[in-house]
Length: 329
Image (cartoon, rainbow, N blue to C red; front, side, top):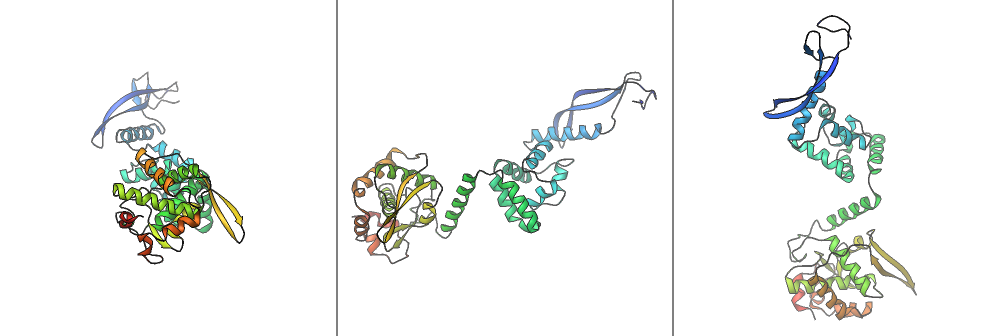
């Protein structure tokens, strides 16, 4: 190229050195690229070299502060095949926010955490899109939703939907109250208990399972003063019934067989595809419930439960307090 210093045409060499500097009050080290006219011994920056050096300095600062680099932000966005503008609007930010973060601005911690989480959890990005849906026309919203959903495993998406449905069911019930047994509902624990029961009882109906869960929680509360599952129960014609039970029965992990029997359909629990997450003391309580009630037919356990004080002293659709654990027959 024509050298701007000796004004001759000759080879100009690009050189790299590790440079230290103070950036936003922090000492950083970055790769500083420059050209040098060997005839004059003068270094200079040509084309976009200066801007690229500044970008490398910013990224060195980001790394030191634990923030995403400009290229990492672009990589997350490209993972979903999103434009800079679309990615910004999904979070409800200004039109050029992400453009600036990928070029000449450093994001704050809050914005960084949102982008980092969107990389780790496509479902979270889908929630952000839903929250800021008004930023897009219907066609654009559908296009973006499809792009994000392509990165979500269907089982994970369905599981998150069921988790959300359970949260809504329990939104009006205080997890620290006697009606939840002073415990937040644990879906994994419920799945583990159902799996264990299904493997130890040959013919487990949906109605019978509901009663066994109630006895397990009541036995656990009586012994440890806390529910095992965090389920709340209501008074129903067939006995105590877990709040959100229909949602639990529809979870992808549940395997249920429908059996036609005269004028009704019996739902038989085959298994629950879940890893067992039960402690020895929990298994001991479940085994006791299986021993006491496992051989009962569905009608027998329903009739038996109708005699419990928990049922006698409550009305239809009323929440059943765990205080009745002390009165179990």
